[in-house]
Length: 91
Picture 1: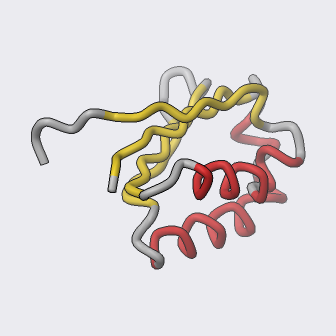
Picture 2: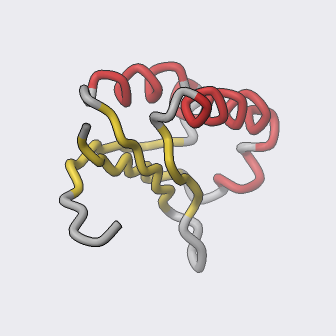
């Protein structure tokens, strides 16, 4: 199992435009959390220009499937995303 960071770069008016998609996004996140894949997630503040989601999975394809199912991505709230392996030294 490896740790990965999913980085979302979001649109300027992300906070207001996410409202119609928020429940579906949170449902998707909770399902990933319940499966033990998603550990933490949330938007960075001041400014709200990125979001970080921390996964622990065997295969980053699991994260890619999350991204492709995410209503924030499908509806243009995320302008760029990136999956990065994370070398955790303190847990």
